[in-house]
Length: 198
Ligand code: IMP
Image (cartoon, rainbow, N blue to C red; front, top):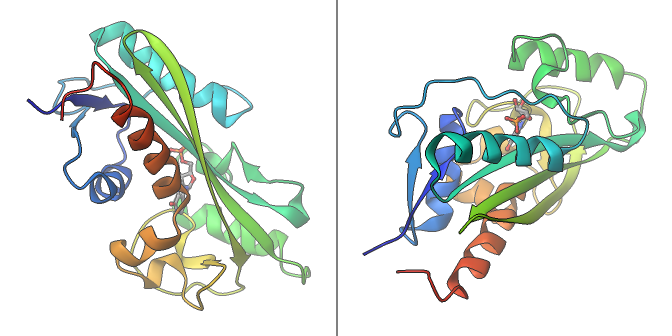
């Protein structure tokens, strides 16, 4: 029987992106499917701590193997901002459009627009914690392009492409994606576990 892991997120975009990478390797149980209806706090100053807090919160409720991820957009000219505050950059309500507007405003006179997305996954497996990181380098353009995806996708162009993430189908975003790279490390780890059932 295939192993299942609870994915500690309420973000359906993240679920879809990761499911595409898994390609059925294991089954994700979403929080909704697990009957958990909470907004998991992300109170810390690093992606690692927030990812850990999310996974630990869900593990303390379910006592089942689970994983979480925390992602930040890190812009070099802004000393790594918005970083761990990416979701609430322009305020507390996770407003993607307001976050993009603030980012473009801060970068309006800046030529060097190098940036990266960084994802940290925390896995709790047989009560042990493991971490996996994925980075996608690119740049922030000065106008929004495309309607796919979420968050900062309309202004981020990964190295090796001329399109923003929001102009790409999911399969194409996953050629470059930070989340995909972290998920592949998770899969590689799980495939080596003797308790793992495929
Ligand atoms: P969190 O990991 O849920 O805290 O997400 C942080 C924020 O980063 C999200 O609300 C989005 O604004 C942004 N973000 C995370 N992953 C992506 C992505 O793949 N593309 C664009 N924006 C993202």
